[in-house]
Length: 289
Ligand code: SAM
Image 1 (spheres, rainbow, N blue to C red):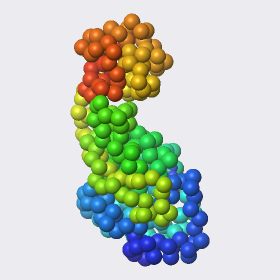
Image 2: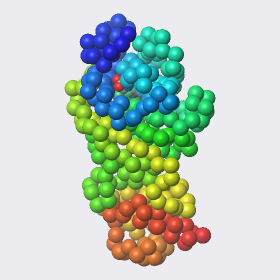
Image 3: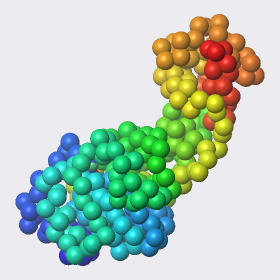
Image 4: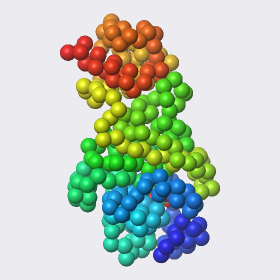
């Protein structure tokens, strides 16, 4: 079976298996060949590349990945899709299908077992209900991921790429930009999927850094500081960081750190760059001892 990306072929497979879409799994299957091409081009997969695909659905993108990559491991939560994937990916000996929840998958063990610890790429038309936890898991997991190419809700793609002082800038922007250089590859309208999602989508490519663009003494503390700064939007940075239980800073200590960094006492987290946050985090570490 080939060319699942053609809508009539996707529909034929779904009917053959009497497949019922599960809303709780964010199932919107891609049916646009031009969009699939854009995803594959952005991901720059070569014949030596191992690939992790999250949520293969009926295997539309998996087929193309199997043609381009060295090996594909596809993690799908919905057990009703497994027999379909076994058919659409039969005769492909470089594809492994795992029925698992990606949020519970030990990605380090998976990459050791299937990729021998080699650097790999991640591709996914992500289930929108858990986009952020999946991205955070990938970015925080200590595994050699070189690139992440994902279909996400348009607003999420914009948040990942936004700069300080803009309305979309927040903890997700900083987490993504600490680990990678994100770019929006293409905007994708709802009619490129079956069934059509309510939201518009976008393909984003994250080139994952070998070394983060800023040096910081304690990465965990940096992310506590970032989360605290955005926990209460429209409040000053001083209020944000002095109210965060994870930091246990007094108001006076928070003010001292902000002053030592050379920021205005009324500065808001929304205006600080990643390197400003790194500076603040190091300062807080010094104060906390
Ligand atoms: N890749 C397919 C495509 O482009 O047509 C399907 C994309 S659909 C937006 C998301 C897929 O992720 C579905 O197949 C869904 O069952 C699967 N999924 C949802 N939650 C998941 C989870 N926690 N772990 C693994 N797969 C999941």
